Length: 387
Image (cartoon, rainbow, N blue to C red; front, side, top):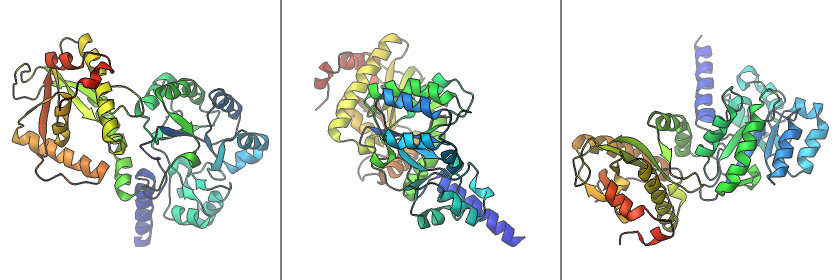
């Protein structure tokens, strides 16, 4: 009984550490380059030709994690994938969760298709998966953006979600499976849109990617809660380009009351994308900040009920360069926002709070002041930074 409990604990720990967190696996590439990798699981099969036609139309190369049983069933499609310049990697012999396999069966599963990467079905690991992959000369490849094409959700809504959450370096999970017809509709939406936004879609081996550290594993594990927070608080991105890092959510101004903006009035809280900003230069941060605030000015003109914009964090001091004022925060705000700011600073930058810099400050701009500064074209906004 004790042995069974230990074995179960080992399987749960492996799944937590290696699938959910992804420690030691490839899950995204360099966040400073506007490149993303489209990856397709489960093929080749009846949908492969249609997927290839769409990729060919947009001049995109992708990575296909194929099943051994499917490769033998459709050898001509496997050759077509390689002939058209796509990367072929292993998804195992059959689409069976690893915890249903004995170690020697899992070893055969991993070696079923030659290549440098292995993606376990469903991403599921056993305590032996990484060891067996290493012995086979493969590295485990996961993802950081799931298309959810296997669900029954509206394909256009799924495509919107992919575009919203796509970031530089993203590895996007899709399927080459006739049971998931949404894949083709999603591709029809995201291929032209991602290109228009400035993303370059490349093969996985062209994406500068390295195994995730423990800290990056915590970043990956927190993605679900991050998305739920955005949905719950109705967070809107200001621009969907690779380096657009500003977002806002509607709420009441937390005060204290300031000239032009009273406590409790309708306002917008400013959020900075903690994934994008660490990989950006100061020049990029300033340029994209200007772009974001001009987009926010357009939104404010359409919503006269919004009386101002604000943000509380250690980074609020940096908002002064964009014309924001600083105001004191309460002890409760300092504790809550300070703890959150400290956590995100370590998680996404690996840094501790700087000495002499308050862990939480309130940066705000009343509506009229904000529009006076940012209601202009991005080119005109070049001169809108405070010294």
